[in-house]
Image (tube, rainbow, N blue to C red; front, side, top):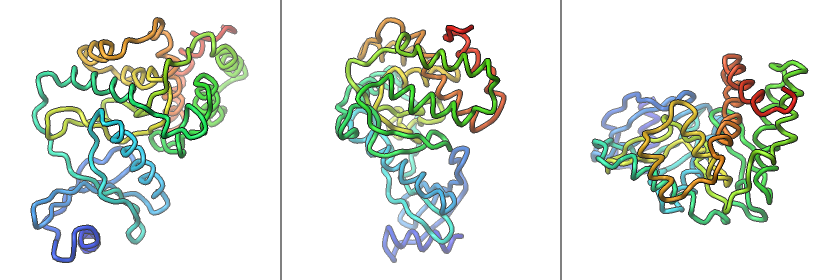
Length: 296
């Protein structure tokens, strides 16, 4: 493989450059990844998957570009995507982590609020919510058809889409309870004051501490939606530091009732996990469904 990496380095950095070393690093649950050190000292992060999954990396590149264009929070620079023999790849700058700054979490909260407050209309031509293209939530496909209203978007393209995939897990009673939640969704959710560009999959594994000592976002599943959906995801698996939420709310106060809506937003991610990882997520899914269903 090193010869292939040498060919790739020559393609992007010139024939006079060369590979000094290659070592495996963490690249997430579904990709292989390596750190490539060049002879001139530059360090490159390369994620790989099968050739058939090249669209996954193209979507990631688009998502990182969308976040970067808000000028609110940092993302790694993408150097290239493509295919090499039977593999697809995403090449990015390698982020050397510095010690976290004292105000790390406050800074992160303010920056995420800034991203949510940035203009997002350029990513939803002909509508308000959605995105210019479909992408992925983890390894699952995520539809982003552009729609004018948030609640129908979340109902049809988030909850209903995942429920269809997971239908064989549920009894007729479960399905009646879920239909009740869908039918009454507009009694629980609210339309946002303005649309926001969302990271889309914002948990502790999808940001890193960068060379400046602050948070950098990685592995997005971007679309334009309600900012509450992003914030809810941060609380799904343990939550971030309290200082993060305090700074976020100072920069962008939440509407009353967010604590109730949070679980409905996270129902989407739990359903996706049910589809990707199996029955262990059935209980958490049904706990939320039964809480909001008028049939229970």
